[in-house]
Image 1: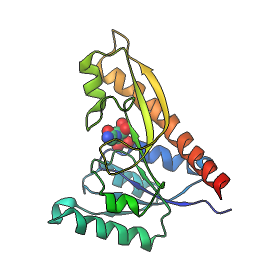
Image 2 (image 1 turned 30 degrees about the vertical axis):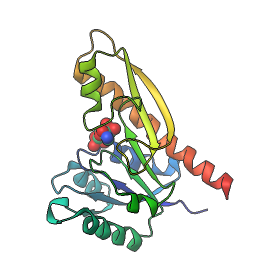
Image 3 (image 1 turned 90 degrees about the vertical axis):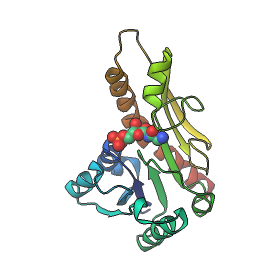
Image 4 (image 1 turned 60 degrees about the vertical axis):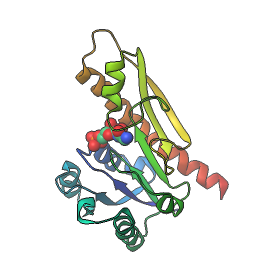
Length: 193
Ligand code: GAR
């Protein structure tokens, strides 16, 4: 069976994107496209390095979210994309957009959801002084870091950890968990067919 065609959405550095690219064969996906909403995202350079097509759809160029999303949807159709993986994509997708890819949009978030939703989950957990935080992979709905949870892994915070230490620990868990969780979703999809 051919591997499902995937688009990764990223707004920033793109280390998760690159990790997914490196592991795409073992995960069972074909990453056909990177979409970024920010033209200076380093993720774009990573796409170039790996010879993966990329498209920048800059939110600031659009008056409203509907037109922005409609351009993204057109690109996704053009590339026959079946699954969307959000990897540090810092925008909320509308219910209309999400409804067009039911069960096919996945996000990674650096906390044990529902704790520490939002854009700075690692910093928020660190400043809150928790002894444990983690990583969550979940299906995307129209809320902010809500949606059915696929997999979660806790990460302990040691008293001597700096914020940078915690970021490193979380990212190394992300690089393991995201490909594994995607593999799980694909296996489930095949079972249901
Ligand atoms: C990752 O830690 C990801 O979990 C987080 O952004 C980072 C992106 O890093 N996502 C969110 O906070 C979503 N709410 P990367 O660009 O190096 O992959």
